[in-house]
Image (cartoon, rainbow, N blue to C red):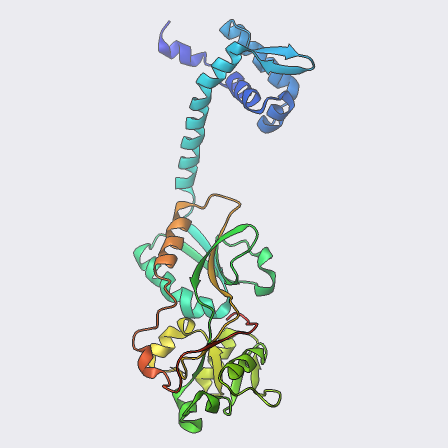
Amino acid sequence: MNSTHEMERLPVGALRCFEAFARLGDIAQAARELGVTPSAVSHQLRGLEELLGVRLTERRGRRLALTQEGRRYFEAVSPAFILLQRATQQIRRNRLPRRVTISALPLVANGWLLPRVGRFMARHPDVEIQIQYARYRNYSSDAADLSLRFGVGDWPGYTSERLFSGEAFPVASPAFIARHGPFGSDRNIGRAPLIHDGSTEQWASWLDGAGAPPSAPLRGIVCEDGLLTRTAMLTGLGIALTRPVLIEEELRAGLLVQLSEQGVTDGQDYYLCVRADQEPLPIIRQLAAWLRATGDGDAAPPGAASRRHPASARRTGTTGQRPA
């Protein structure tokens, strides 16, 4: 009998039922996986035994189990099913759209992510990237492939890797400095109009670290998030505490100036998070690797040192911070 005729007689349906039963050890579970009835699985198993001329299963009490011959047969056919599954998954993956969804906090998306994504897309023009704002107070509702988050790196359902520090420093525009400066020391910074990101707590901690704790409740404009805070700085409304890596383009261009080496932090940093409930597509892994490789956010932007206020040596305070 030739091989072509043997292939025509290959009982694919019966083999699928046998493989599922042997792997799961239960007729009902195999039926649920295959989307058929338990009686259909039993019928296919009997047909396969008749074709092979051997007993593959036997009754052990109320359960159906593999015979010794059945176990040997499963060991022989199982690798073939694994190869078929892998080949099918690979074909499907290759046909999937090269699309990645990224979520990020507003200032992180505008100041850090977009420049890097732009360079990635220039090298990979066939990739579709969708960027959306992250929900800081409800990260659990975020279904993006990748997300840039602020915290301690522990979010259920995601693996996380630290990208850069959450330490914030005082920054202002040259026009503001011209009107209210120069600032001879960190103590003088607290006497100027301040911009607050969410609350006054961060500035209170920074001033305490500078040796000039506020004697009265702090005043000044309060912005909802880091993106509004950046706009307020550029407008010349005051000095704000922000992360230099998130405004690196403005620092390079001289639109904003870092006034002090003293920072403030509460131990929270920025993380690149990848969903853990599914194996990421190759393009997602590729973009994540790109962001990690280009994400050395702790390094100062070129030329930034020349636009920093020489008032004090670097010190770090702590506070409960809001993300940018």
